[in-house]
Length: 189
Image (cartoon, rainbow, N blue to C red; front, side, top):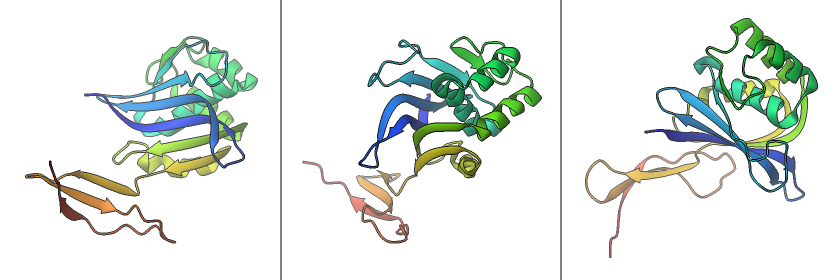
């Protein structure tokens, strides 16, 4: 069953430290990962309701998603020119980066994307066990404002019975230390 494991809101910073998101991306992981990029509807964009779908390479899922943003949201002229030259489906709404582009050309596009001042704010939400969890350090190589949200608190059903296992805390602490896992009974009326 396809599962959303990450989400990226793309837009501009607001005075309240939030984001005015013009675009939204979802990472769906199943047999292979897939990024979906679409407008939020908050403002009119050149996408005109189109949903862009990319199959990233497994070793570079996050960076391939950031390249999508540079190409379809920021619309960097230089990156668009290179993409049109190297990526067989750059002007379309679907691409498989495992088949539609040579690895060295893809790496050149990623390199240009890293150097780009995107002028955007990204809010990246990463669920437990997302394939991009171990790729987040790569954000240090990019030039945009970013907030990364990772699980601080989880509650899931225990294996048997009406209990839940809890990890983390909903109470903010200075160091956001995770509390040990516990079980609580589920009260059913």
